[in-house]
Length: 564
Image (cartoon, rainbow, N blue to C red; front, side, top):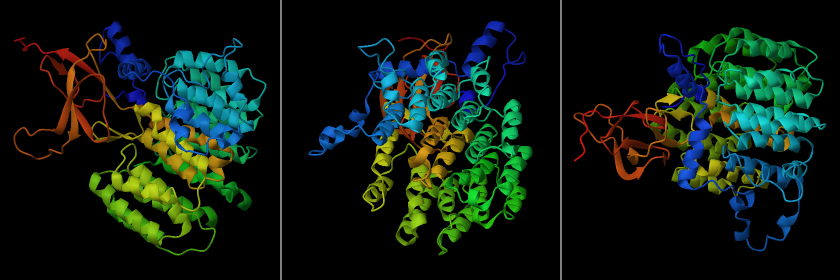
């Protein structure tokens, strides 16, 4: 079962579910995801991947001959790329070689040293990467990040605040530590610190629809004195917290914020995230978006079309609606003047709508290949992102082939490739980014919201992710979940049982009791499930309490089982 807290839902266990206080406590712990870190580390120990990896292990630098000499340059850019790679690779393991490794000379640890190998806003990402490494482990995470909150460097404080949001992402705690700490920093004078706190809140409480946050963040949106970037990140945080809620008040305040901005501000690349924030409120809610879409047509031309396309593509994300895909393809086929930006979101939109089922996804891949051949430059740049979301954490040969061709394309940036390598090795291969769960049956709006935000930021790489807003990459944490199957007994102690893992077969509508998996191997739990794989118990000694075997599964003894 996948816990509701990972999906951003706040579920309170009341007397109707169980009257026993002890049971209540245990159930609330499961629902709040408190055990996630523990289970994930159990899996890591079982597969023997606990040893921290360094970015060099990932780049495989020694294999590129003759280039070894130049890599000794200690540039801030390379360090920044290494910070991200390190965070993604060691995500959730609680130890790494850059931020948490103890140093020989001093007692303060080498984390301080790595932190200062980054320049200005690079320090924010470095401090926040500690949150990623201690992912889901709230107690030790908050303790280790606390020392950075007292730093004199505003970038470090901002990073620590963002890190606190990341550590508590998807794990609910009754005393709400993230809310208590981050609220103090929302109205500080320093822009960086404000962004760190606001984005931290957005990540920590994504999908929870907390009213307190609506009140405070809407105030920032409505304040005409707020700097543009603070405004944009407040909108994104609200979009993530109220994802798919169709909340009209927030939609209104984002629309006003868009209307009041001057032309110069609307031309800033970061402003493009405002329509995304608006779209997040209607994620997957189909025609509920129409009233807001009508309003968006009245905006300034520069952002109006962009807003219209973005709203449509997010409202129909994951629905497989063919008519909308055709409409977006129509937009992509127009030849536009320079400076028009709304074709990028249209390309992403095709992928978002078609990712709902296998067949649609394959058709979309074909359409995207056509766009690569005949599209304009701004369309071609969005295609790799669209291919990525269609096959997220599910590498298909034809798509990999296209992407590897594109990686030799004329306009590219090396540090981006490095970060991509980090994402490929996410959590040493133990994590997935796919927003679908329960046998691709359910879609997590929180995970998809995080992915969409990052992809839209990637449409203009140079000014966002390769500029000073690289910490937007951390929003991807919302989609990260272990691709594991961990079985526990009724006392929630890990229990090792044999399971068969194989390719899932679609058996809808077949008569009799057809096999649900093919080409299986038998392993004992905990096991990893790759994309498109399914597991079933290979023993009759236990009965699973849930129909879908993924994440944590509680087993109870089968009363009718007799040992031979």
